[in-house]
Length: 603
Image 1 (cartoon, one colour):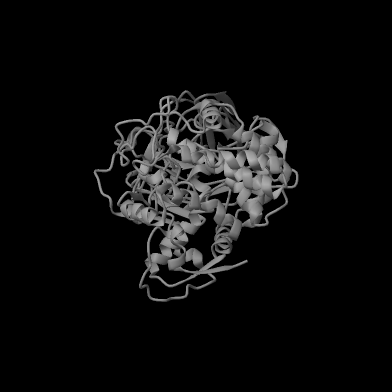
Image 2 (cartoon, helix red, strand yellow):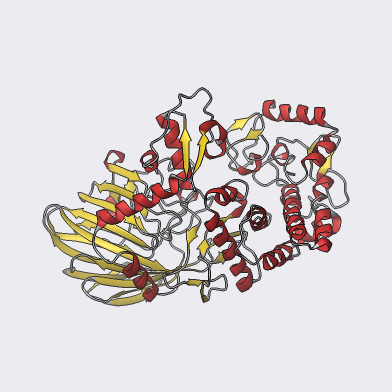
C-alpha cells in the first residue's frame, strides 16, 4: 500500500517546516536517490553511514573510534581515521554497543593492534578523507589513504559483503579483530580452509550476554594466515580461543585487484551463520547484491510519496524515513532459530523474530507509523514481544540482542500493543497480550508499588518520580483500553483508576506536575525549567502535559480552556537559561524541546 502526503502535514518525520515550498512531485521510482546516510553522523546524532537493508540483521559500517557516547554508532564524522569495518551497529541510540567482528584491509607489515588515533602508524588504523567517501542506501565506500585500498560495503538481511581493491603488493592483508571495543567474555576463530574462517564473539556490555557467530568466505585463497592471542601473533595457527583473539590473511595482489569477503552472522551458531550466507549470498556478485539492497530500500521508501519542498527538504525527509527502517532488526536465522531472552536457542513459529526495541524513544511516533505503512512488521514486533513474555516472563522495555536491558522508564510495549490492536492489526494472541500487559503493571519494584498504593511516586524515595508517575498512568490506560476491547470490565475498572493517578502530581498553585514527598508535601524550592532528578530527560514544562489519555481532564486541572491556552502560550514563549542537566533536550522554542521525546506530544 502507498501513502501520499504533502510536506507540511508530516512534520514528525522532518523536524522542519515547509511553509511556502514550491510544489514538486518526487519521482516515484527512485526515492532512494534522496537518502543521505551521512545525516546524523556528526555532533550528537549517533547514526552510521554504512550498508544495511530494511530491518536487516547486519549493519556493516566503518568504525572510527572506540567506545564513548558520541561513538555510540561506531562512527563520527569529525574523526580522521578508520579502525575497520564491523558487521553490527546501532543507530541513534544514547549508549554505545555492537560494532562486532571487525575486518580491516591493510598493506605491509601485519599489525594486530588498532593503533592510536593520533598516530595511526602504531596499528592497523588508517587515515581517510570525506572527499573519498561515498554513502547511499545499501552501499558504502571509502579510500583508506595509508594503504591505497578502496573498501566497499553492501549487505543482505543476514550477511555483509566487503569488496577491497588493493594496490600491487606482496603484503596485502585483511585483519580480523574480535576484541575491538572490548567487553569480550569469550571468543574464538578457526580457519576451515584457505578461503573460509568462522568464529564467535561473545560480549557483555549494554547487552549483558550477546552472541555473534560468524562465517566468512573469501573470493581468493590466501597465501598466508595467522592468529594473534593477546596481540602475540602466531603465523599458521589454525584455531584459538580467548578474550583477545585476532587474525589475519595475506595475499599477493596486482594493481587494482579486488578481493571480496562475504560474512554471515548468527546469534545461534557458526553453522547458522554459514546457512544464512549460503541462503542469501551464494555467489560473488557484489554489484548485484548492492543493486538488490537499493531495490529493497526503494520498495520501503516508496510507501510514502511526497509533494512539495526543495531538493534539500526531500533529502531530509527520505533520509528520516530511511532511518525508520534501520532498526528494529531481524534476529533469527533462515531456519527460524533465534537466541531468546533466557539466552537459550528457540525457533520462531508463525512469526519473524526481531531485536533492538528502543520503546521509550519510539512508542510516541515511530511505532504508530509502522501500523500505517508496515502493519505486517507491527504484528511481528508484537509477536516478538509476546515470545519474550512466554520465555522470560516479561514484556520488553528496551530489549537489545535478546537481552532485557531495563533501560529508560515506563512499560511502552503496552501502547504499541494497544495501538496495533485498536487499528485492526491481528494475528497475535490478544488474550495473552492483555495478560502480559497486566503483568507489566503489576511487576515488582518500589516505583510501581508506590504508584499503585499511594497514587503517586514519592520524590524522596524514587528518582524520576514525576516522569515515572506520568508514564505509568498512560501505560495503565493502555491496559484499561485493551481490557475494555476484550470485554474484561473488572480489569478495565481497576486500570481506568490507575490511569488518572497522574492528577495526583499536579500542583494547582503552580500549574505544573510537581515532585511530591512521601508525606504528601511538595518539594521546595521548585523551578519548572530546572532539569532536576525528578524528571527524566526533561523538566516540568515538558512533562506536565503528558496525559494523552485524559486531555479533557488535564484541561480541567488547569481551570478550563482559557487558562490552559495561556499555559500553552507560556510554554512556547518562556525563556530561561536552560539547565544543562536536561539531557538531550534541543531545538528549543521557549520551553518546548522539539529535539527530544518528552515534548513530542505537546504541540
